[in-house]
Image 1 (cartoon, rainbow, N blue to C red):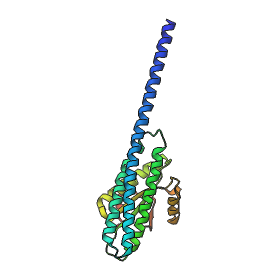
Image 2 (image 1 turned 90 degrees about the vertical axis):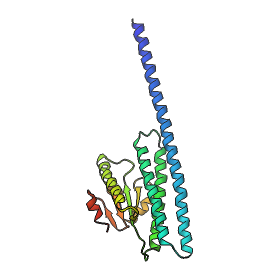
Image 3 (image 1 turned 60 degrees about the vertical axis):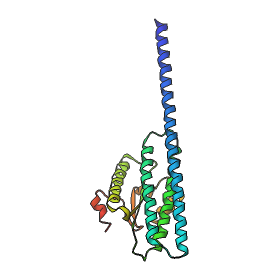
Image 4 (image 1 turned 180 degrees about the horizontal axis):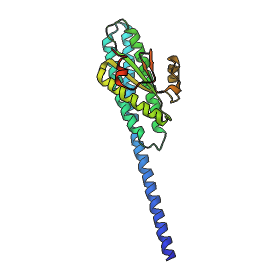
Length: 223
């Protein structure tokens, strides 16, 4: 009877190890699929950003078509914003590797380049009739506390609602403020944004919001 119990024990142990190993294997496969999708999104967006930057250089040679430049920049920002939602869904899944976090850094660099391109376009078009609101949303990415996660959930919801109301009048760029990227640190320092303040909403590089609860509070900054 003792031998029988040992036999059952070893069978149960082997089955448990097999199921655990299979779960880890499937998890890694799913993680690699998610990472591959993110890499594909990044590559496509990188090409789009280079295209916009080249357009901006071309405009600077002669007459600058502000309406077209602004529209192209906003369209690209909207594309990046939608892809950010996909990235967020993938990152909410259990991560077994650091690859997705590395891809997130690429996206942060891409969004930072988009922001700098926007600054250049707005400077050249400051005397034109074509304009838009530029919103950069710096958020806590690496290890946000439960309280910060809840706050960022509110901020994200309000910014989504604002974008739905204002549409092409808004260029919305989310950037992780704590992902150890030197360019992002320099920009945050320039606009007096500290990591311990995150999340922060920066409007037109002038207005910094750290506390906001309702869409009406947010809307008062937009005409």
